[in-house]
Image: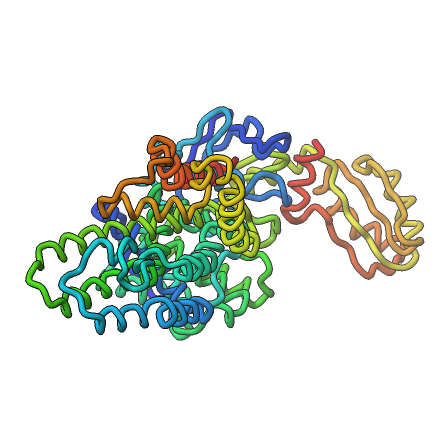
Length: 310
Length: 282
């Protein structure tokens, strides 16, 4: 049974006339949870409310059954990795970790040992004595991650930890984050606006848009929502005009439209299973030359678009 | 990439070491500032020009004991100026505070470093105490340490036997040194909390002192109390009070008290409010 880590009830936060969160309702349990939403959707506001650096205007948020606002003891149980880079270029990685550890009351041998442990976890042991100014983007993210776990928090809040990193670095950071949960036991909330990245981290997601939580749960549960919406398939190739005409006669077809000339069509269907069951025979019977066929609904981006537009 | 397995050990509530957190911030500021070549230059030049020669001459000049007059200049000792009421010293301290305090809060406001502190178990007061502690540590190298050295040298070379009287002056000098340090640092930190640009903060600290001094100098012709608008004058009268001398008869002691209280504590209050507002996302 998963433990409830974060619960919000009618949570709202606004900055002047700008709304950060609006009647936000969400429950997050243990494990890795992905917060997905476009830039400005309210992900960072939610994480800042969870760590208690800002105060809700209305409603309330409970983190591990406690109100995070003005609650230093709770902060000892949370590790926060902000989306922006506030590292001092002049400091070394070790100095940064010493500062962060000290802010959590760690000192002496305990701090030294912990420093060695976390630098190994994030793969930064060899670069600890170098100035942060000379770090690559990936190294800066790693040292920030190390700073967020140095005090052994139960819950980790990672705000866009993969942003700005190149694909290789993203891959390794994803491995590190997964290990933080699988091997070290941290519960993690990770935000991102790139859906496929979160999909590689976890199957448990929450979708945020314009300050509201529009859906949450397992990816499979959310995928079921696709069935309530038309499915879009792109077909590219030669001699596909006849195929387009034939598809219009099928019961499951809602619409067929040409894109980029007559070598590409977009088919909108109500029953994708029936479509995929019959399309091979149709292509064979019409002697079409199909170069490529793919569904534009196959990733989380589509789910997100459905929910937002719905 | 590989990962080394470490058993998760949840926090058990023992790390409540409050003072250590404050010390961590102070230490970081102190060491960071002492790495600055500009600050080191001000400290070295200030030490040589302002303190080294008076300490040397003071030791060489015949004296029976360390007296309050030597410190605040109500005697013929050292040309009648006294060790503390040295205009050049004020300029160097002001320069130092401008550089030390300029980015103290302003930089955090600019690059959102607040989150680095306030996402940890740190309160506004801890943050400010830590920041000011570091700045006080650096500033006191020029505002506190030389005063103590001067007193100890004078006591060490005195010809008389009244060491009790000398130690009494040493005690008052410690108070004067602490007052000078807090006087400048609290003002500098306040200016730094009012802007996100450290250049504005640095220039603001330096220039606002001169503007207040000019205002005081202009209006003092109408009323002597206007002289208290000058922070330097206010500080020098404070020294007189510490060493047991009276204020000039044409200075209103109530106005002096209120202004001294304001310049010591109002900046701290303003800074606290500024940081608290930022911390709470306003």
